[in-house]
Image (tube, rainbow, N blue to C red; front, side, top):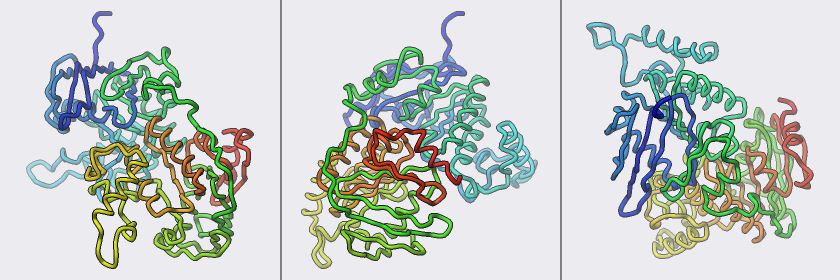
Length: 502
């Protein structure tokens, strides 16, 4: 075989924003039919490189070759027409439009000689695509996108990409919101794409998943490529070391904080169709883990506890006294705070600054009557951002421009501004890299040392076992069991309970 051919190649790509270098001489390539994983901490430069490939950003220097030819991509539409598609982590379909309309948006087929859409042809072409991926039995072209689940929407995005005759597909954290079964379906689709010769750039923070899927793995750190490896030449620990540039002494640090009295207790919590007779308690300095499959009722119980939803029955006790929580403001008054699972939709106002997000719902700390003390607000928000090690230029930075890990730290800073006795962390490390995860674990231990009671919901079993002092397992809206000693629990045992009643 002659010279190696690549569907895509970047040579010495560099990019800076306002004098800050975010990419430096980045070399990267993808072969036809290959899955090349790109890894790195949040802020390492992965998204910037992908946006340059898609024509969203212009490179400062360097060269892009597509199918061996130098190209200058001037926008996402041009990239699509060339055969490059990207499936973003935050899916953004048009929810009120049909599947067929979403797939063919911007290139609608019309009845000859008229301005009217040829819906029959669009639906027929969509059905052909659905059949190729064995989806025609579950959904139909005329269904609205809002009727689909996350996994199905993601599949529609993949089908849309393929319908452009894509030769290269970029997948950004494609499994972050999928169940185990949905993830398996995605992996089958990836295998089909590879057999067809489609090159795939796969961005994920799930190291074991990457090692399972990838043909090659490249690692970015601080804007520079620090290595490209065939799968056989790299392992889990080496990837972590390359990503963070240092050894992490134990991925899950041990909580040595003394456990105090019971701070929060809920008894016989029920909400028809979601959970039934759930009782639990958590002590000062304790990390209580809630395990279970997606839909087991974990998040629903916590949402009802903090007043987002109204339970049908149940009691809440704080420091041994009964309390009534009708809304999130009541929860805050009772020193209970929650960092929600979907930080972008529920935890942050993406178009506002870091300061505004931390201050949100904490105005009573820097206001008197109807007047806001802006100097005090800036000082307290700055202090909390520094405590949480939020990486930013200033408090005026827009949250949308921060990495996922730093956005999560802003959510936590906002929660901790109210000085809670109990903090609920729902999927606190979803979609963030191993270095940022470790920082959040250390933060959790620091909170435990301060005597704060922590309830953590996580779908990552090693994280749940590694960080929790006690684990409650939920399935089908009920608690199925409790594990007290984490060194005596296994992933298999937790999963067995999680599958009860399913």
